[in-house]
Image (cartoon, rainbow, N blue to C red; front, side, top):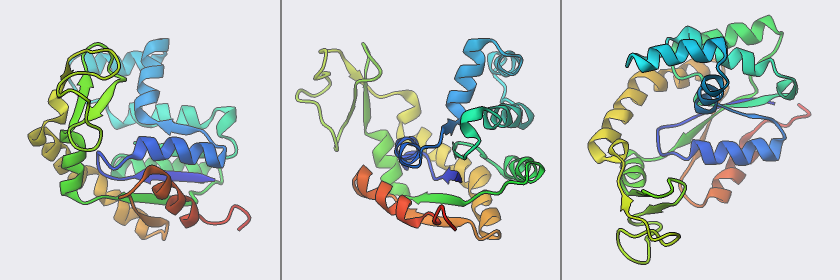
Length: 218
């Protein structure tokens, strides 16, 4: 099964992608992971991406597309994959279509995780990260530490990342509406989009997503 997962920042794409990929026994292909892997391994694409990033420039679509295509060529993706963070815009969506067409393959579904904008802001702006260990994450409303500003795990100081401040989150949402939302209409024209209400517990959203997917025997 070949799936694209879309949704605004804070919709829980990474969490849902991991659960869905495990349930479907297909690799979770995340743009962030692709960049980190290529850069850490010093691949030609990684070095090219890093040169743009070091200069403070956006990595061109051509590099992102090449990384995604290279990953989809790996043996573990032969039976399908779940794409998270790619395609991010219309150009990447069209490139993915061309790639799949060349391989005589098609997408099975595009899952659109739907979350109200105010909830997105609340989810992200409420995050607090431990300065000692960034894997220790709390939330000002949903997962409060026992003592305000103090990590339950190690006693480190909790802080709000600049990227998580409300004004930054709203700018990220503007970028999402401008660049990524158009791919939803693009895929709706192909009758691939299934909208998944992404409010509620993680396992509830996963069940909704699994139930919305076409039968693998179809």
